[in-house]
Image 1 (cartoon, rainbow over the protein chains, first blue to last red):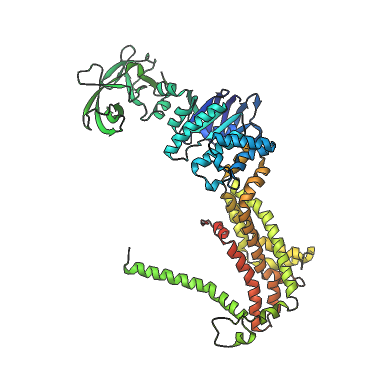
Image 2 (cartoon, rainbow over the protein chains, first blue to last red):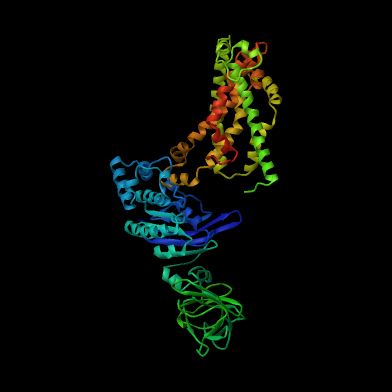
Amino acid sequence: MAEIKIKSVARRFGKVEALKSIDLTVADQEFLVLLGASGCGKTTLLRIVAGLETASEGEVWIGDERVDRLPPRDRKIAMVFQNYAVFPHLTVFENIAFGLRMAKLDQNTVDKRVKRTAELMHIDPLLERYSGQLSGGQRQRVAVARALAMEPEVLLMDEPLSNLDALLRMEMRAELKSVLAESKTTTIYVTHDQVEAMSMADRIAIMNKGEIVQASDAVDIYRNPSHRFVGSFIGNPPMNFLPAKPLEGSMWSVANLQLPGPAHPSNATDSQIEFAIRPEDLTVGDATTEGAMHVKVRVVEPLGSHLLASCLVDEQLFRVVLDSDHPITSGDSLYIKPMMDRIRWFDAKSEHVL
Amino acid sequence: MNVDGTSSAMRWTFRVSILVLCAWVLVPIYLLITNTLSSPEEVVSFPKKVWPSFNLESISFFINFAGVGQALWNSVLVACVTMVFSISAGAPAGYALSRFDFRGKSFYRVLILMTRAFPLPLLALPLAVLYIRIGLDDTILGLALLHTMLALPFAVLITYSLFSGIPVELEEAAWTLGCNRFQAFYKVIFPLVLPGLTASAIFAFVISWNEVFGAAVLTIEHRTLPAFLLQGLDQAPLHLKFAGGAVLVAPALLFIFLVRKYLFSMWGIANR
């Protein structure tokens, strides 16, 4: 159990900046998910905490100890790898016992710990098997058990579920969440799967191009993206964005609507700010509805729980989530009214929320 | 299925080519074995029998021929020293190539192969002069050093592909579980590459076992078997030449057969 402090950590590969001065604190016992598209630097950051990669600059603290100069074995961490990394020449038992034997624990303690973690991960009947005789899901369980058996201060997980098929992934997700909640270990978990991130995390740190753009809980990130990237990345489908033109006062013209927004920046010119709304935060009206936006429906996708209509407004893509039994086909006109308290405004230049 | 003229012609060309290539390798081996196992009279007579008479006269005469035993022993010694040298120098190089990025890595790989581009006669004579100067001539060690030079490129390339076949994550996992680099290597990587390493060692053994030119130039008293045969059997009757050839070929063939899957993997062919 320990707090992790990452202080202005940067990593450069030649001229490429993989990480640009990251500051992040993970509280004791917190489950933090690093979420981002591939190549955003999330795995690099995790590996720097693990000691498998060296930061170009900055400090990493685990508990009261500065660890960035220490080798992985002295950092009191355990790591779960994307491809499991279960040792193929050892049985499941010896895999889980590997770290304990390195720590020179007595046979009794080793037996006890292996047994306990194996039961926790439901692999106790497999202890005598080799990795080649296990399914992907079982290998993943072994990898997690091996990490938990170490009773580490910090648990690091690098896309541990991404090699599993969809159904198994959902099952493991819930199971892993309950196991980790019980173990109360400070955890950093890397994934590119936003559903996984939202379902498991105490807090999500969203990364883009080597920077953390927002770190908050799932609902806050979904409702109040602080950065345009977060809105366009989180949610399926993601947020709609439309350019806004300044009018009198703090009014803005968006498509055929006039909406109250943030005060004008002093040097406001056309489309310097953007209107944003989630596809489900819209109510459907008709031609007579006041304050409704007129959109042309291009494609309708029936998704069971709802309809997803891809529409056009001023030649811009605009997605709307509709009730499943809404009688709508492509080519129709649709009148939709944004929920006023769900509208967000972004600075088109800095991409920050206004 | 396509059965028109071109594709069936293609198929036949393919089959015939395979047959020719197999015959190319197998017919000499067949002749060698049958003649070795025939009596001296049968070897020089004609027509040949398809099936040999399993007469062991030639082979036992050959084995008991003066000097053969000593030459065989020298061969084994040189091959074993070559094996140890090329693995202890080749495996670290293969590991470095597979795990680390360094400046000039691809050039280094080409360079390793380049060492095989020099014909041995070009190297053997200056080497003989040098060996005489430093007193390495006509020694097991001197010849083993030459053979190591011949076997080393293969040892590097085979071990390179072996280490590349083992995910880095296994090593990294060992590091996070309390190992230093050395411990991670001998607890995780070494057991996994052991079969391949053995194969690579055996290949080095075979290279040394088969090498004749360098052995003939660099040794006088301490001949290895191929050099001894080259010199001694020149005047010998035909059946003895066959017996000598068989004694030389059989272990090499057997060893290569045992390690064939690792030799394929050296050239990047999947070893399944």
